[in-house]
Image (cartoon, rainbow, N blue to C red; front, side, top):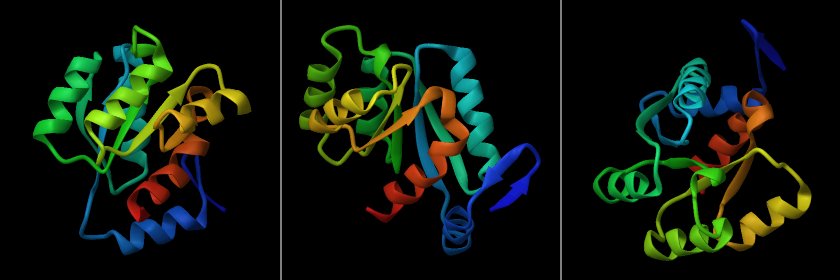
Amino acid sequence: MRVRGNFTMDSSLHTMRRSQRQRHISVLVADKNAHFRETIRRVLSRLGQCVASGEASTVAEVISQVTSTRFDLVLLDIEMVTQDRLAELKRLGQRLPDMKVAVLLSDDTPEYREAVERHGGHFCVAKDSLEDQLPPVLKRAVAS
Protein backbone atom coordinates (compact mmCIF):
# COMPACT_ATOMS: atom_id res chain seq x y z
CA MET A 1 0.00 0.00 0.00
CA ARG A 2 1.05 3.55 -0.67
CA VAL A 3 0.03 6.52 1.43
CA ARG A 4 -0.69 9.83 -0.23
CA GLY A 5 -1.56 12.65 2.15
CA ASN A 6 -4.19 11.28 4.50
CA PHE A 7 -5.40 8.83 1.86
CA THR A 8 -4.30 5.21 1.54
CA MET A 9 -4.17 3.95 -2.02
CA ASP A 10 -3.68 0.30 -2.91
CA SER A 11 -1.58 -0.86 -5.84
CA SER A 12 -4.65 -1.94 -7.82
CA LEU A 13 -5.85 1.66 -7.98
CA HIS A 14 -2.34 2.77 -8.94
CA THR A 15 -2.40 0.22 -11.78
CA MET A 16 -5.86 1.42 -12.82
CA ARG A 17 -4.64 5.02 -12.89
CA ARG A 18 -1.64 4.10 -15.06
CA SER A 19 -3.80 2.14 -17.52
CA GLN A 20 -6.41 4.91 -17.64
CA ARG A 21 -3.98 7.83 -18.17
CA GLN A 22 -5.83 9.22 -21.17
CA ARG A 23 -9.34 8.49 -19.90
CA HIS A 24 -11.09 10.03 -16.95
CA ILE A 25 -13.57 7.98 -14.96
CA SER A 26 -16.78 9.96 -15.17
CA VAL A 27 -18.95 9.77 -12.04
CA LEU A 28 -22.42 11.10 -11.30
CA VAL A 29 -22.66 11.90 -7.59
CA ALA A 30 -26.24 11.47 -6.40
CA ASP A 31 -26.89 12.30 -2.77
CA LYS A 32 -29.54 14.50 -1.21
CA ASN A 33 -26.96 16.05 1.13
CA ALA A 34 -24.90 18.80 -0.57
CA HIS A 35 -22.16 18.52 2.06
CA PHE A 36 -21.72 14.80 1.42
CA ARG A 37 -21.67 15.39 -2.37
CA GLU A 38 -18.77 17.79 -1.73
CA THR A 39 -17.01 15.13 0.37
CA ILE A 40 -17.38 12.64 -2.48
CA ARG A 41 -16.02 15.17 -4.98
CA ARG A 42 -12.95 15.70 -2.78
CA VAL A 43 -12.34 11.95 -2.52
CA LEU A 44 -12.72 11.53 -6.29
CA SER A 45 -10.32 14.41 -6.86
CA ARG A 46 -7.69 12.77 -4.67
CA LEU A 47 -8.00 9.58 -6.71
CA GLY A 48 -6.61 11.39 -9.73
CA GLN A 49 -8.31 10.19 -12.90
CA CYS A 50 -11.81 10.33 -11.40
CA VAL A 51 -14.06 13.24 -12.23
CA ALA A 52 -17.38 14.13 -10.62
CA SER A 53 -18.96 14.97 -13.98
CA GLY A 54 -22.39 15.60 -12.55
CA GLU A 55 -24.43 15.91 -9.40
CA ALA A 56 -27.99 15.06 -8.51
CA SER A 57 -30.03 15.53 -5.36
CA THR A 58 -33.18 13.68 -6.54
CA VAL A 59 -33.94 10.51 -8.49
CA ALA A 60 -35.52 12.66 -11.23
CA GLU A 61 -32.21 14.51 -11.62
CA VAL A 62 -30.37 11.17 -11.82
CA ILE A 63 -32.65 9.97 -14.62
CA SER A 64 -32.35 13.27 -16.47
CA GLN A 65 -28.56 13.27 -16.29
CA VAL A 66 -27.94 9.62 -17.19
CA THR A 67 -30.24 9.87 -20.20
CA SER A 68 -28.35 12.90 -21.53
CA THR A 69 -24.74 12.24 -20.41
CA ARG A 70 -22.55 9.14 -20.34
CA PHE A 71 -21.17 8.28 -16.91
CA ASP A 72 -18.92 5.37 -16.05
CA LEU A 73 -20.58 5.10 -12.65
CA VAL A 74 -23.43 6.56 -10.64
CA LEU A 75 -22.83 6.86 -6.89
CA LEU A 76 -26.40 6.73 -5.58
CA ASP A 77 -27.42 7.43 -2.00
CA ILE A 78 -30.08 4.78 -1.40
CA GLU A 79 -31.70 7.06 1.19
CA MET A 80 -32.30 9.62 -1.56
CA VAL A 81 -34.89 7.27 -3.02
CA THR A 82 -38.09 8.23 -1.22
CA GLN A 83 -40.37 5.29 -2.00
CA ASP A 84 -39.61 1.61 -1.45
CA ARG A 85 -35.87 2.01 -1.90
CA LEU A 86 -35.01 -1.42 -3.22
CA ALA A 87 -37.99 -1.59 -5.58
CA GLU A 88 -37.13 1.88 -6.91
CA LEU A 89 -33.52 0.80 -7.45
CA LYS A 90 -34.79 -2.16 -9.47
CA ARG A 91 -37.06 0.12 -11.55
CA LEU A 92 -34.12 2.46 -12.24
CA GLY A 93 -32.06 -0.51 -13.42
CA GLN A 94 -34.86 -1.66 -15.72
CA ARG A 95 -35.40 1.83 -17.11
CA LEU A 96 -31.66 2.49 -17.58
CA PRO A 97 -30.06 -0.95 -18.11
CA ASP A 98 -26.64 0.37 -19.11
CA MET A 99 -26.28 2.43 -15.93
CA LYS A 100 -23.66 1.10 -13.48
CA VAL A 101 -24.67 1.93 -9.93
CA ALA A 102 -22.70 1.98 -6.71
CA VAL A 103 -25.16 2.37 -3.87
CA LEU A 104 -24.01 4.52 -0.97
CA LEU A 105 -25.05 2.86 2.28
CA SER A 106 -25.55 4.40 5.70
CA ASP A 107 -26.70 1.05 7.07
CA ASP A 108 -23.93 -1.26 5.86
CA THR A 109 -24.85 -4.85 6.67
CA PRO A 110 -24.20 -8.00 4.63
CA GLU A 111 -27.96 -8.56 4.34
CA TYR A 112 -28.56 -5.07 3.00
CA ARG A 113 -25.67 -5.41 0.52
CA GLU A 114 -27.15 -8.67 -0.77
CA ALA A 115 -30.58 -7.06 -1.10
CA VAL A 116 -29.12 -4.10 -3.01
CA GLU A 117 -27.33 -6.43 -5.42
CA ARG A 118 -30.51 -8.47 -5.96
CA HIS A 119 -32.39 -5.27 -6.83
CA GLY A 120 -30.00 -3.91 -9.43
CA GLY A 121 -27.17 -2.24 -7.54
CA HIS A 122 -23.88 -3.30 -9.08
CA PHE A 123 -21.72 -2.24 -6.15
CA CYS A 124 -22.08 -1.03 -2.56
CA VAL A 125 -20.02 1.57 -0.73
CA ALA A 126 -20.44 2.32 2.97
CA LYS A 127 -20.60 6.08 3.52
CA ASP A 128 -18.39 5.83 6.58
CA SER A 129 -15.73 3.87 4.62
CA LEU A 130 -15.84 5.85 1.39
CA GLU A 131 -12.09 6.34 1.00
CA ASP A 132 -11.35 2.64 1.55
CA GLN A 133 -14.20 1.13 -0.45
CA LEU A 134 -14.49 3.51 -3.41
CA PRO A 135 -11.15 2.76 -5.20
CA PRO A 136 -11.83 -0.96 -5.78
CA VAL A 137 -15.42 -0.19 -6.81
CA LEU A 138 -14.18 2.31 -9.40
CA LYS A 139 -11.71 -0.25 -10.71
CA ARG A 140 -14.42 -2.92 -11.05
CA ALA A 141 -16.87 -0.45 -12.61
CA VAL A 142 -14.39 0.56 -15.31
CA ALA A 143 -13.38 -3.05 -15.95
CA SER A 144 -16.95 -4.34 -16.37
